[in-house]
Image (cartoon, rainbow, N blue to C red; front, side):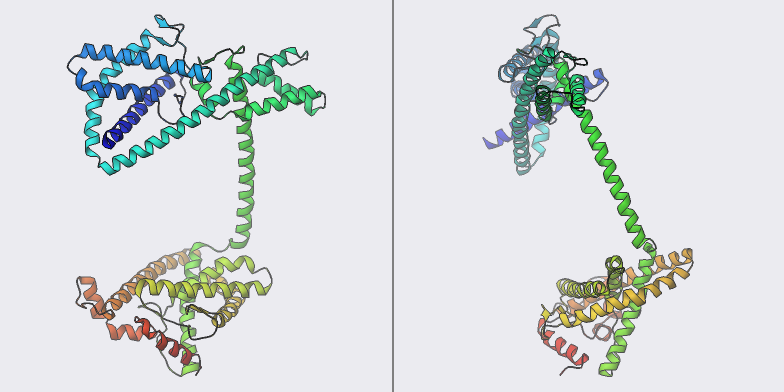
Length: 521
């Protein structure tokens, strides 16, 4: 039962979409403009869905007799068309189509030409679409079919509820406009044209701005605005069905079309004004950004990363020699004296702190302090998450932040950020600026490629090292692992990364070494 209901929903949706597409294309070609037909806002026409589903279910019995299939199809089309027209008029006072001018029509709801065309469409369903739909449905896994049917059912129900709400609003708008038109007819003023409510209301608004309109006229403008604000999908329905009529309505719906078209024009004008304001604000923002970052071209960031990685590596080497009297590797990459933590930190500091460089120095200090701590924390977190290793550990020090950052070192990051932005970066920018731009860009591209490859190789080597240290079978399984084992074995990696540990139990040892490096006991 569930499988049959799922299939029925999918078949109904497919025939609804096909019917909507064919009718919208036909009406668009006749009107020479794009028209979205259908009572619902979505790309579905339920009347074609019901008709197609009925012919689909009867196709097994009718396939052997084309004449009977055509007769049944025309009968189904006539009954559905008449019931749909009657239901819309009964509940919403709407007659979306009117075939009164067609020969052999029945109360203007259906006509011979219309249901003969749908009779031929029924034959198409019986002999082509139904077999194709069954074949396509057999290819879809049942869980996917149920999910698709559920989504289609929810979409159709929500769209139908929204469409009924819009139809009620359209009826309210039409009868409200009829009341306004009657009052316009009673007004003896120059410029009042009851046949064109939109033009008349524009004239009344002009009089109101000049304070030449009484309380009754102002109340009329307020009522008119209330009608226009409830338009919803009303304008789409009016444009999609030019022959639409409303029961017991004295005025032409062309008047309402004019009103809604006038409101759409005003909305477009407001939208254009808003877009112009947004563009002006964007231009001003771009101007402010250019004033701050105007000389900071993208290739300069590569230079800053390269130079800061090199300077940071050298500073850490000197730091270790001065405090501990030992020379050890402080590089972050396998090839070259570079430490990417300092390079990335410098780039982020330039991008974030450059707008603050014109303010008081304390902004640069606190900005560098926060950025430095965040960079340390994130690098430590992702290193442990990806490689299962740690390169620094502050959990035994006061003011530690999960052992990954420390307020004491963040203080030095603040000093470093202040000195970097005030002293180092201006000189670095001046040095980069003295390099001819063409040669500077070429070097930046070459260095960017080298650094990316270097960091990639370093990540692979550390990952392979972690596998060897993890107790698993150390035998290489491919050429890359064999290359890494040969050229970057455990001894080589320990020499390059002396402070990196993979066993969480070694964190205490790492913290102890950090304290010794800092001169603590």
